[in-house]
Length: 216
Image 1 (tube, rainbow, N blue to C red):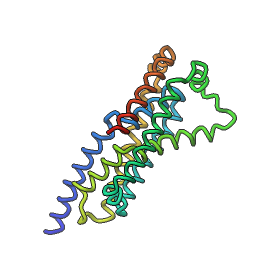
Image 2: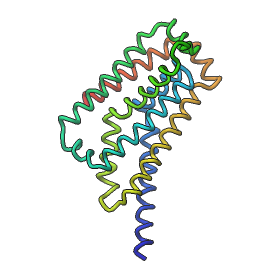
Image 3: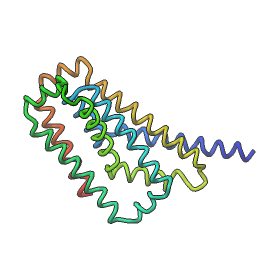
Image 4: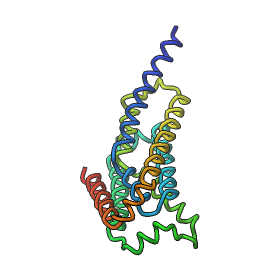
């Protein structure tokens, strides 16, 4: 009987986490802006690598929450501010680079002319997604709130690990879907026509998000 109640309790917990996380991951933010920009500027495989980086970043948030570092981060405002500043500056730099990127650079990137070191370019795309997610204070606050409100000390370690992998996979799938959408045939026609304008808009969005995070 107790086992049944326990199972029902975790099922309710999982449904709540699933819905809240799905809403959070689909809401426009730094991760979405980065994947969209990668799709517009570099192409599908680079956007997919950034999507993978973002999803692996989710695991980092889960790990520090599970081992208790999340509590230290939550109660140490100085450390949290360092995270916030690093994340904001990194986003602002990418937004600035996107805004001032020349038409020649956009066309070169769109044609995937990275023959000298293609592996390095893919790794850069992965790291871009990974660093953006890990140092995103909105993501940090989300996971701290999740552990404070929904996941308590009675939740077994294996269940928490399952939640972590679930959110990692769902995040990866969502951003892969975004990558495919923005690199589809119709999207490419639109992007080719308005590539400079789109790049500048994405740059402004990234810089705006970074300043909003920094001043929050």
